[in-house]
Length: 588
Image (cartoon, rainbow, N blue to C red):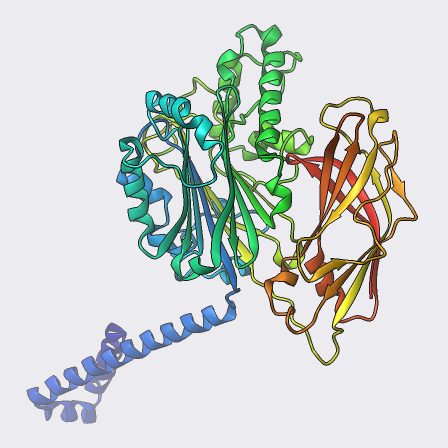
């Protein structure tokens, strides 16, 4: 600005020297006047610069005001297989949000490949990038030397599996260094709600200190098996909302795959089936599936699913050498679509073989395994490059309170492991149900009719004629009570996987009185419908369907009558679909 003003002044001066009046006028000016003139121009430039700064700040303020910040929980989830090596400061700093600051994950420099598909620019900008995230959950696998991990598994495995408290051995030198580093990066503005060590897996749950008084950790369960792997499952309750976090490491049997092409396909299928079954078992912790009992669920860790390209043009399974050539070619072309189509986890979810109840963001970046211990994407092609570390999520609340994935990215700068960590930032909107006392009733009646199920399947995969299903109903919200004229279960339908209950009516009364309507009971109300199999010796669970009552109340409460016909939802067990449920619903 100063240079522009000086140029204009010179042009005016040269124009004045060209005329007699201008020349005589300028000749009469003194050096002091010229200095004053230059000083005046300098002050004008400073003033203009300040005004420009003010305009920029005003424009920035208007830009921020166009994007209204949404209220809710920002949840940071990170998983890292340390490959039995303590990370250095540079690696951990690249992985963790420093002092929990959201700006370390949400900023204008974020890569487009890190923003989850489907997240609009408006949605991204409306997530508050200022301040500190509310919840931080970290899972570390292979965080101990192998000898220490084996010793802890033998000495503490049986004890830890029966306890639900924090059981990190005091003064354990193998975890103390990592623990000190993690806490230093997270900072003092967070309360450690849970720290749990099982075998060589370590899980942390941090909650921002201003929310800690309304938060608690319940129902922590662990599972360790030399043949299956390790899992730690914990449920965090924040203001009435249940968030379950299940950290897993599934055992990889790649080393058992033979070199002969005739048996490679069969061996890979056996290894994949083993991982699928283990994932289902880890979700059914202590007979209670947190993916159904909680409002929102995360499954994360070293799941060990690999990239498995299709057979070659001769219809013969690729040899390891051929797969390495295919992998190098796909990585050179950055062919993420082909890599995703060959991803064992994506195919397992699509085919309902494992974890089909969950969603995982599309990977638009380099595979995270198997790497050299160096910064950047330097592969060790002795194994097929794969997305071994993953984060999956699920919401049992729909529409208004569905969990949103915003950021999903690897950390290439992590240099001390053969795995690159994965991290994600998720947003949970806080949208309360607002009632108008002038028009809203004090209570409503929710009626379910024309109940039927289809395509029921049991875990043992025996004949469908052995299925004798009936339905059980349960709602934990105190403001929702079953009508006295209704029963909490249906009659048993024998020897069918397509049962119907045309005459069964289930009614619930929802109390909307002033003492309840502003609490968390209504906005977090869920109805669980469990499909049971009445066997000859014992009963078993075929699957559970979850209905978001809060969403139904939100849609219907301002209307005299609201109804939907042939509503379809799924039964789930162990993260897989096990059947469909159909019903009619009416609210009045």
